[in-house]
Length: 326
View (cartoon, helix red, strand yellow):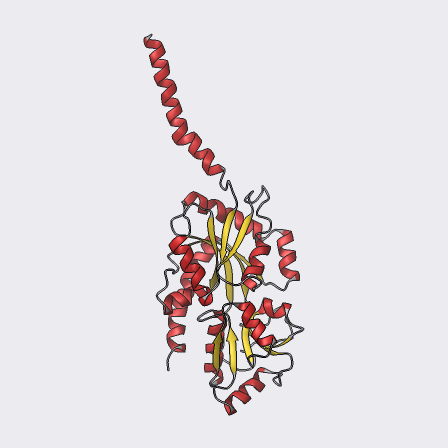
């Protein structure tokens, strides 16, 4: 009888150990058990939304997540609506991610009282870097950036320039451009890249700053006058940079895009995704789709993104202080 009781106790102890160590490990290994939501803080069809769908299209394969990623759009206020939502209401179980945009969310966290900053996100990986470009309607009389500058100097404040919200890359490019050219322009913030592009195509504004990828896909309907970057881009080899025409506009507005969790997600899930996502972003089918759609790719690991967040925040604090001076 005593041996039987001892055996039962031993069996129970083994079961307890299995629950805490064995079963727990199995549960972690099975993540994710269902589709994962990816919050895109911009309108459907824009560059972030468009690219997010490309880079996550292979997620359901067993060699990657083994579950699909479902895109959920929460646009508004240049991304603030979506990013505030994920920090306030996003789950911390690994099933709610967000697509981040730098410099957008960092600049906004410096200027506004947002719920997010670089310490509220757990970056996973970066998929691309999309420069801002200066664009005008197809029938615009402006054929060069200098044409627009000359007109703006003769007509202070009358040149309307649209972009995808306040203190997003487009707005930063606008601020740098207007300061460097010493012209007074009027900025029109939209809810995202799509409505901003539509305003230019329909000639509701005289010009716009938008994503190179969006401009590339719409190049038959607009004129692309210049690139806000340090060098020309392979997709637009004949388009000069603003630097080339003598304007002090650097790469501060280049839009880095990637995925992140809200702070609080278990570290093992973060580590698992940080290992998987760069491989998924470098999948041959993803690379081909990104290239044919004119979407600039730049894959970065979690550690590289963490450093990029820190470096950009420090730089933007100084830059924005200068740009916001009256």
